Length: 429
Image (cartoon, rainbow, N blue to C red; front, side):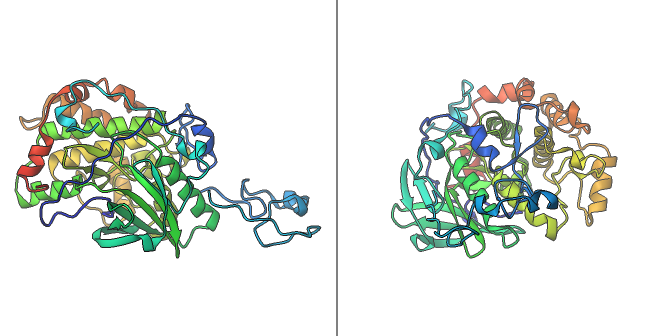
């Protein structure tokens, strides 16, 4: 899926606007997200964003057995606006929807992820059909956005470059068609996007807001300059060169910090780590996008479209004997390992599959990919990649353990000219 919130670069991209995030309140994050998601197998209560079966009599509960439904007092059940239930003489009133420098030149000391924001909880006015830009809220409709051109397209949606007319803010708008989902499930996705839009981690793409229009979910987010899949194509295919290890090192630091922030502060698992979801701006800052939200949409649509043939899936997610155990952070660790090895090699490490059965055989039964032992790859990089790609999920390190590896520790403090390198390869001006 190449539908991404970044600018095309047929010509060098102009510097996308950089934002400084405030430190919002932290309160009741787990409770709010629990309303939107189901729990995974993580012992600390990490949430896997996924669609839950809905009880049509009470959308807030899981589906009940037929015998239980017969005993329900429908007069006491929540009612839809404009409808009357037995014994009701009135119609309920509908409720209203409710660091500035170059990262690689200023990373001499580790920056701990900030606390999770709960602006969505403390601000009742924050709702769908609303944008939050530089701390100010704007009600908006599609008419308030001016389309500037396409940024990408994939199996699950398109991304357009748009301008918010009232503020002049250019943004990436991801439009995902979800005709299969019930209305309340779409609402849950929008609410999850709103909550995630309150985060303040500098390693994660900023979300401005979202809305639902004519069967599409519109997710408005920060516009960056490129993504690692396009950078890889530029370097390996067009320039016949390689991505330097120090660039991969800085990318690794940002992605692992972002994933750890999602897990520890927001109680969310990403579920769709891949090169196209690792973005970079003209300051040389790497940022992770599409956490939770797109993963939920993609999984829902995949049930009827492509049976889940996704190349970055971990063995335990593909193997029928283990696929039902629930998604854990170790699955995201595997996905990042594949991403790292692919970007280091310049090609997808498994080659190309034509069927889900070929994928299952290669990933589940075959050896894990690795980097060859030569002068191009340091022992620290090979060690880190091998740790991420342990075939057994329980043997893979979590994010805190990955931060203890020499490869991570080296590049969390190293000064690397990422922005200069991006200019040299023609990605930015």
